[in-house]
Image (cartoon, rainbow over the protein chains, first blue to last red):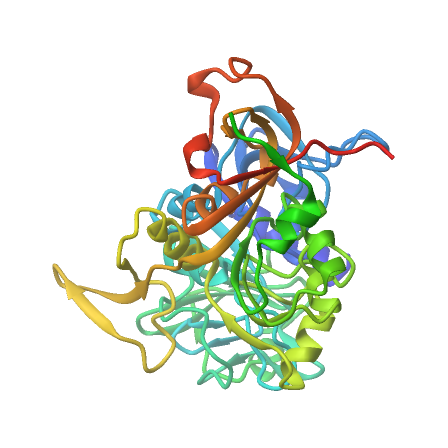
Length: 217
Length: 216
């Protein structure tokens, strides 16, 4: 199983029935492919739709029906479209149950940086700051390291997306939960030891009573 | 009964150096004919307020590529490498605003409010913070513009507008927040074709309608 699929599968296990969920562009969109059977999730795209679904058949796409990455989508029965003020009222106003975003760094207090690398990558924050500030649960889905450099660090060296700690961090090595006491290692990837996770992490990790392998079935 | 403008006449209403709000999200829901006309007339020095600058050959990206824009106020520019290149080279001023804050600043501009209070973006330093009922907020001033260029699915002869799906995005907000509002619709229908409850933007806000699309 490749790392992206592993992360997406584990994040999908956080989905709860009958909830509103926003998936960031990139790796987080894969989560939609692993929604557990019997779990009804409504996906919001920040550009103004709740209830979007898979891409239509080739040649049947609607130019005005897209997701936040400008990919063509369909509208499922019960879908609703709205403007950007409504979209972000839902996001910032706590009406969004869960958001999944990518990350550049997460620090020891669970703060996320994912929008700016000085003098190099300047994508802009888009909806990321509102999502981290407003969603009830914030899940970061990212690789544990970038070219060998840990992405979980003591202190952020990149501008923070929000001061609010995220709910959970899911990487290709581990599931980590920020708590007031510090980062807690909850689960590890099958075949990966606690020592290996610690070696790849740039911040102290507290251990939960047991650190089982992720259930990716 | 108003009369329609061709895109070129509309582009002439946008002065060089003007502040222009342009609807669209990654080019979806942008007024493509007016944008093309602005490129053709060689507009210069524009300050563009928009969610993003799409891609170099798409939507607002065409204005960036053609050198029409001096300053951008947007939430995201990562999909346009030309915008990023110009920004890093110091040739384009870019002010990044969180998307929800951008939407609310424009929305607040509509009723000419002073601004909004939001907790988004508190991590940034040097911002004015206020306390309300024990909660901290940033003060975000309203945004207004000289001209708003909006795109709609349909318009009636009075300028009442309806939008389609994810092409709606910033258009209804911008339609309220500028001194001159120019609306480009895919189709124009007679009065009565749009039921009162179906209208998304009241025609009273629209100063100019772009003529129907011309088939070549």
